[in-house]
Image 1 (cartoon, rainbow, N blue to C red):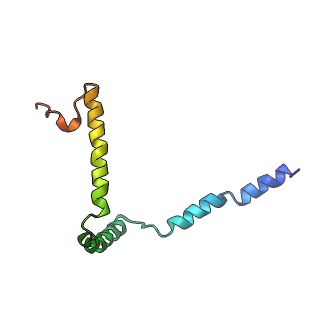
Image 2 (cartoon, rainbow, N blue to C red):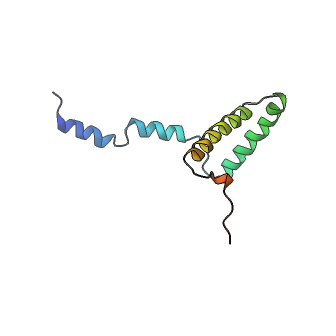
Image 3 (cartoon, rainbow, N blue to C red):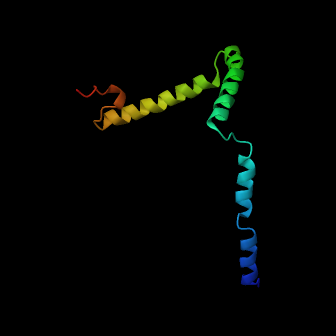
Length: 94
């Protein structure tokens, strides 16, 4: 049987644990500031334009269609129980 005191000393010397070390390593390449996130996004968008123009049916269109189907099911569920969906509600008088 292992010595419980030995286990405690092992936990104290490696308090971060392997999961935390792996997470820190994975996070090391992530952007640190808002400006770096924006520049990374602009670069990704600039690269994607030629790809979207080449493809007559980019994956984004399929994703949008899928989201529209989910929203349609949600609207149908709202109406089935007598709730007016938010996009169909009249604006509140001011």
